[in-house]
Length: 134
Image (cartoon, rainbow, N blue to C red; front, side):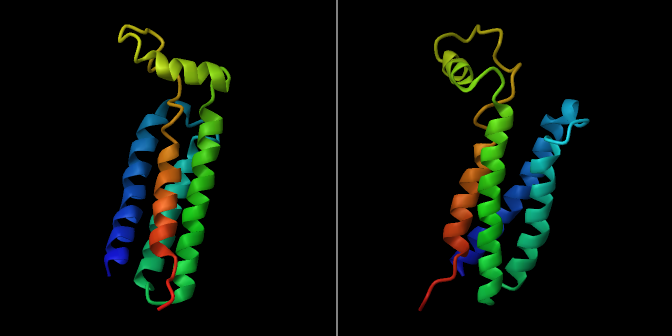
């Protein structure tokens, strides 16, 4: 029962991600890439909600685990799309915020680590939704 409740919370998190990402990507909606996490979040809410309704069926939990794996792929793809000036340059910029809070370049580039939220939710989702043998 606890796994089902936690998985429901995770699926609900995709709704929040969808709303937040739609707002954050508002200036780039003419490109197809910003739509990927938005559409996938919608997919997670619809298919995940259906699988949650069928929680006692093993196949539904395997489907749920599979779409959580898909979330990890979307997250890694997002990191790839967020690389702006090369991975090392972006990582250097990411850590430069600790050196000075006066860095004028902060906030002008896509956030490199933000898409990893899909990876984190996916990992937890697979762990919670994978059917266990009694």
